[in-house]
Every structure is written in structure tokens, then in C-alpha cells.
Image 1 (tube, one colour):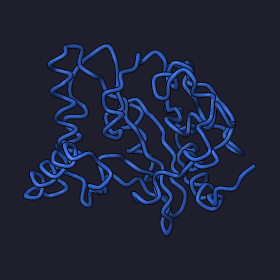
Image 2 (image 1 turned 45 degrees about the vertical axis):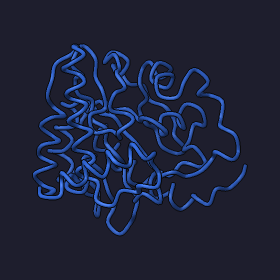
Image 3 (image 1 turned 90 degrees about the horizontal axis):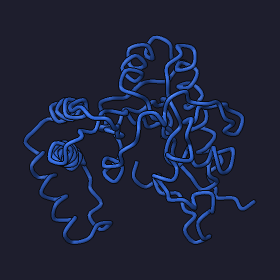
Image 4 (image 1 turned 120 degrees about the horizontal axis):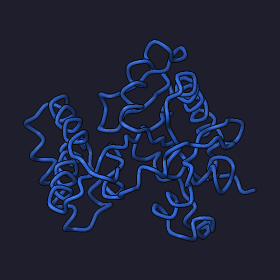
Length: 243
């Protein structure tokens, strides 16, 4: 198998993931691996060979309980970081490795209410970006990102994070979304039932939980052909340069 030079990175990620999963399992808190980590678990039974991050999804109630318990139950050197960005992260001291926690919150049913929540979250994400890589975006999106970044400059990071958490929890609806997910993930709606009764599955040497209907989640995220790896020239780590 081709080496992507990520063995050390993935070993560190596995260690952080193992500590987070241990606390979740010991306290019987529902969670699932998500996004590329879920795809790796299903398609490779391990990390995607060229992947360089880890994502978990948790229902709001599960996340709140985890946040209360983890500081007292985590392994030495591990922390739950809620001060750096809108995404809560489990980190290992002295390492760049961390696990993103995507919280599942209600997505309002009404079109206007849904659009208003997503607009506010995306605005706040732009405000919270400290060093935007403008060259990665089209001119129109570059202008929007610059505008939201500028709007956030007078506000403290703590104030913006409090506002983000408040909006993320808001709304009622029959579907859920990853309220602490990246910009492109925010609008993805899921039936909460697909996350019920998460099932154990191997991820390398670890055992993690996947959604009961992993196919529905992966199809929503990546399309119906998610089991087909991308072309060789697209098999690239995409997160190391953003950290």
C-alpha cells in the first residue's frame, strides 16, 4: 500500500481518539465517528490512508455530559478545548493531534427559521476565523469572508464563542445538523433516527461506534459511490496546513 507519510500523525490521532472513546464508553454516552473517520471505518476498517484528522458526532445531551465529565476522567495530558474555535476539540498536550466534536442540534423545520439559524452560524464562523486563507476562495466568497472577519474584529473571541454556542442550541425541528461543523456541513440535515443505537466497528486497533444507518449518513456526505476511493491525484491530506 502506498505510504502517505502520515503514520506518526495517525498514531497520535488514534491515541487522542482512544482517550475520548474510553470516557464516552465508560459513561455510556452516545456518539459516532463522523465524516472522513466514518468513511475510513466503513471503507478501510481503519483511517483513510491519506486522512489527517478525526471527527466524532454527539447528540447535544451527550456532548454536554461529556464536557462535564471529561476533565476529571481524561488521561494525563488530555484536555477538552472549547476556547480555540467553535468546534470543541479533545487535544493532547505537546501534540498537534486533536479530535473534532460535531454536536448534533435541531435544524428548524421552517425555511425562513432554518435559513436564519444557518446564516447566523456562518456569519459567526467568519468572525471567528483569525487567519483566513483568502486564496482558497472565489472572489465573491473572499469578499464575504473578509466582511464577516472585519465585523468580528471589535468583539472578543469569548463573546463570539458564547454567541455561537447560543445560536447552535437554538431552534426546534424534526431533523438535526452538525451545529459545530465546518461551513459546508452546517446545512446538511439528518433524520436523528440514523444515529440511534450506534454500533461497534473496528478502526484499526480501536473499536468505535458508527451510526446504525451508516449508509444513509455516508451517502448524504459523499454520494452513493462513497465506497469507491478517489483518483490517486486527489488522495491528499487536507487539514494539516489549516492547524
